[in-house]
Amino acid sequence: MPTQLSYAREGKITKAMEYVAAVENIDVNTVKKGISEGTLIIPANINHKNLKPIAIGKGVKTKINANIGASRVRASVDEELKKIRLCMKHGADTAMDLSTGGNLNDIREAIIKEATIPIGTVPTYQVIEEKQTIDDLKPEDWLDVIEQQAKQGVDYMTIHAGVLQKTLPLLKGRLTGVVSRGGAILVRWMKANDKENPLFTQFDQICEIFEKYDVTFSLGDSLRPGCLHDATDKAQIAELKILGDLTLKAWDKNCQVMIEGPGHIPLNEIKLNVELEKKYCHNAPFYVLGPLVTDIAPGYDHITSSIGAAVAGMHGADYLCYVTPAEHLGLPTPKMVKDGIIAYKIAAHAADIAKGIPNVRDRDDELSKARFSFDWEKQFALSLDPEEAKKIRSDLNLGADFCSMCGPDFCSMRLYSKTEGIKTHNEEKSNVEFKHRLLTKDLKKLVNKKYMAEEKLV
Image (cartoon, rainbow, N blue to C red; front, side, top):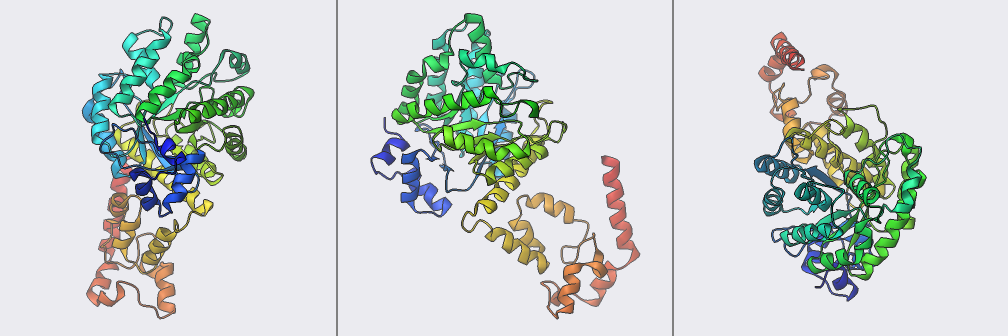
């Protein structure tokens, strides 16, 4: 079955290539060339019928992924559909269904049917859930689940094929061992059966399934560091080199590939990690989880990780997997999903500005103009989260040409505009009665009352 990669190698332009070229505002031949060289991917399963394709990789905007999924503790199709709708509403470019509980096939089918964005999975989770064992699994159990999920329309799958028997001794000295859930399952199976990783030994068969449905490989980093102490160690780098070899094998089978990366990385090692991935994995797109740049912020890891994500993106990472406030603590709520998405939209956009992606800063400049002229509605329209911005602004009449931080007398932009004789957006429709009302003590009491109420809620 032809894939986006095989079409590109033949010099053929697909509808998906045309679509992403229009969205990215780049020449479609640039897209075709990137796909043929493996520096760009379009995860697009032929059975995902309502998909709006996206491009991930060199020369296009940095993309973000949102993880969703049910667990054995909490499993609900309705809740997962609510999460996927939030993902699309707030701008996640993809979503991964990482469900480990409930009816996995029904949950996945509902998500794929609802989603217009690419959907990824980790098939190992379903293998375990169905068989209720790790030690007694048969290698072909993985192939069965991979084929089943590919038929459903999954666009990309995390395949932990890079952790091998020879890499396990390199884990000695780590503080947190193996923190990849899929990786830990494979390590357990390998030790219990004294055999090589079944995803590695059956890699050719997996390629055949992926080529049939045009599923994209997300080669998993089973040995990614789970804390700063373990970052950029021998185990992580050894696996990265193996993933580079597997990339070439997948390309030979006309399968698209991206590489998963850390994890927990100090700020000063992020650039090196991106460079090593590009070197060992032949410039395949790099998909990073964060990375988290400190280990001491439970409840705020969407922030500490988005710092690392922005830096990674700046240095060439192509795809950022979000982290929510629930990371290391529990299953995220829909609200936490939104918080993670917004944090990573900020990180990706900041990275694109640093990368010099053409026209990406236009939105910032337009919002700045609106801010200077006190055009609140335009500011909201251009912001990443208009609802939140409006909610915070609601303490004052939307027509006011200042905010409650400085008030009318100390607003720097208002003062400068008046000093320069420039009329602001709202000054022309201001009147004496309106200004007088804004300056009364009643307004100050109203603002204070609102903030006091918010303090009590915290």
